[in-house]
Amino acid sequence: MYLDHRVTVKIARILNMIDLSALLLDNSGSVILPEGDPRVLNLPEAIRTNPTMPLVYGGFTLIGTSEDQPVFICLTGDSEDVKKCAVLCAELINMMLREDMSQTNREQSLRMMLRGEVETSEFETLAAEHGIPMQANRCVLYFYFQDLEAEAALQMMNDGLDSEEDMLTEVGRHSIALLKVMHPDETFEELQEYARAIEDTFQTETGKSVLVGISEPREDLINIPEAFEEARNAINIGRIYHSGRTVFAYRNLLLERFLNEVAPDMSAQYNAMIFNRKTARLFNEEMVHTIETFFDNSLNLSETARKLYIHRNTLVYRLEKVQRAIGLDLRNFDDAVTFKMMMLLGKNTVSRKFRL
Image (cartoon, rainbow, N blue to C red; front, side, top):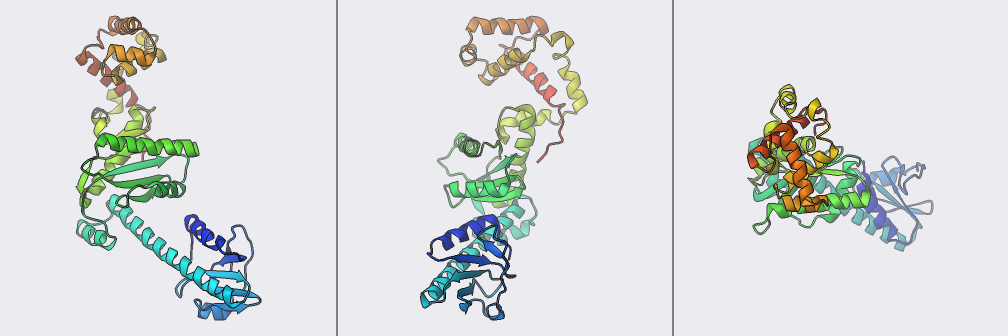
């Protein structure tokens, strides 16, 4: 019976509660716990035949956790108290393994639903089997952990879930999907803050970067595959146009989604109308940062100057410098939209090999 690391950690906690030397063995007699123990013990045929009946053998007490695919506990000692302790440990571990198997099956079913691997006619049956309501206002949050295995990240996220209605599952080696219920008093802005809080926690605790994509809400579980694709594409598209960001909401990428459909060669042609050899010195790193900050602050001169720690007149001077060079006044909404589209089209030519 294969036990992943998450399960063995839980079993180790149970065995550590008893004041006896304990081993956990697989069906071949190999030691599972303590980890790193190379021994392989010879399990008597009697314990294989009747695994749930404690067996005293050579000063040890052996017992299996179940009749079907058991793991075995080996405790030092052969007294009645040791036997009782072995039985109790076996029952606790068996209960935990059953719960874990149920959770694993639920996660697997959820993963199939998200990926669209379940026929529409089967959705309701599968949902009922795992106690998942068909009707609820839900969003999908897709987490991509660039330098962290999904299994480790899943354990951390499971420990931090604040609602039993929310469900997590691995959807890739480095990816996790969270199906989160949105209550009537919760806003989408609060959901984005929730995603940023998770991203910040992982960054602080692991030092690893996380990308998060957020879908639009869906009322019916049948439509969850669409939400899953939205959350995943929010990362795929968002990272092209906003490389400094980590959280991407699908609804906030309308322009980027449109521009992403433009062919790279055509994108390059339009981008070159503004960004070319003649303007290369003008649009240095400082100027581009100034313009992006101006856009991020809704063309507000005072707020942009405050964010950049420069005088308002300095900002005006820079914007007028752009106007003299390319004929676009970025303080004018139409000109600002034109410039932003040309700027984003330049990012549309980058490599798209990375796709979730």
